[in-house]
Amino acid sequence: QVQLVESGGGLVQPGGSLTISCAASGFAFENYWMYWVRQRPGEGRELVSTISADGTITRYEDSVEGRFMISRDNAEKKLSMEMSDLKPEDTAMYYCVRAVTEVPLGQGTQVTVSA
Image 1 (tube, rainbow, N blue to C red):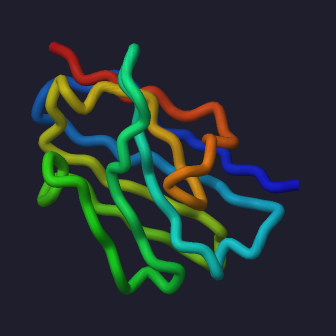
Image 2: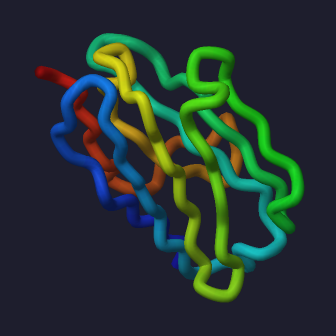
């Protein structure tokens, strides 16, 4: 059974930092490109970051470029994203997915940026 379990979200002040993680199981994690997507209330899902199966290629949505860093540990089957200089507009539910079009399998982790 494929499982993706996100964790690490929370409340942070503008300018702060947070690292979110995703524990994967039930599939060959090391063979998949992985993605972080986010969804703000009342909006559709937005692709935030991408990482290749071996971790050598990363891509970011323009608004997070230079502030977010995606990484993975294939031995641990874990996907992470370090987020810094957080802004109120980063407030959203964050999900890890195996494909951009995939409906998130996990519950997501809520990131709230507020003073």
